[in-house]
Length: 529
Image (cartoon, rainbow, N blue to C red; front, side, top):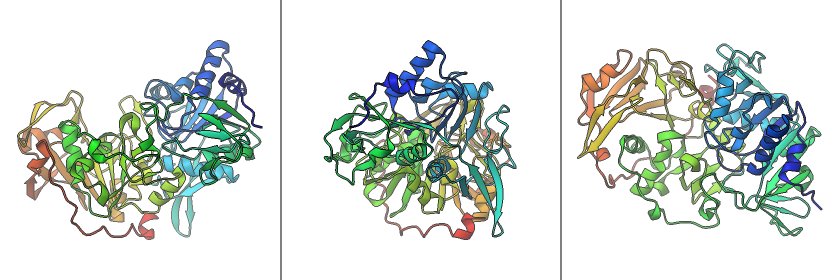
């Protein structure tokens, strides 16, 4: 029989100095009741102390829930994370030098889980070269307090690689849907399956404690073996939480885990704002047969466009969480999808990405410079970290970066096929030099990647000499609204053309994808350049 304990008893098993790993991805798969109990224990007793926390990517709801519950100096001494955008309290601790912080690419973090399971020393990969992950830059260290080098530069067969060292976790908080009487865990109501198996293996093989929160208990042997994600011998204790939510926004939606399928026609088009305009223009870069990744922010709005245009069946949309096909969600539903065709463990998704399998990737930008370098990871008081951005941008054939041209108070009207800028943003995003290199434009040019930057009023391409302006919105003034809002001289294409007026009108654009499929992935030589 399984060991069934309360969330409070689970929290009591964490000892001073433990290396705690927590499963979950954004707002999915989070063992929320156990995290809440650990927070309560620390508030009441100031114990445990000095934990090292390992999590693959941002687990939380921006300022609350998830790992936001653990953002206390004293409780945490060091954190390894793929992204902190959903954990603003942790950002604050890192920014104020109260804890040590390491940021590794999300794909590397998932692959480290498998490395830890097999007691390997870490991960060797091309991912992160010539970005702030590279030890010749910042080595993934997030503040001055973080001194130990955990990323090394290697040369193998005449090529450069990065070696990411793996920690050794000794306690895990994980989550599933059902556990049978022998502790075998299935995830039939989960919208993602993540890397929970590898984390359970890693902690078990290190002689640690594995705790799994589940929604329900079932009889021995009643779970279909192909639905079982974690065998019972890997789990020490279970916490029963019948009310666990599928995501932070949804109690349970059967269309997000494959139990049912909903008509795409039930999805309402987003309002026509400048963000919608950008997402629509980005969708014009899609080609029939494309396998696509969608990042956070504006890019996550593209599936809604695809649904309105009826093109979702001509492309395969993927999210780094392991979701393939369907219509991905965004905001607190990011990482899930309506009507997914497959849900695979996250490390395998990144194997595909890292190997150059993506035809096109759609991502955001916070800063862009004249060489096409992009910063999405550190700007102002934001210490977001890379998430899957570095894996994706170093592997995809075509890249489309999206964002407004300026930020901070921008006020834009979209009417009658034209754009009107009523108030300019205070912050320039196109700057002489980015604050941190999340994407290296020079490396992309060397590897032959096709790179496009899309804003609400202008479209740019990256060529051998840097950025060139190729489209301008109807209603936008070239000098006042575009060139003067860029912090460096930018070339204007002699073939400058207006952005499609359909982007600025309500209703379907009549988009079709009668184009030849994209060519095969980036060659291995380019990936390892």
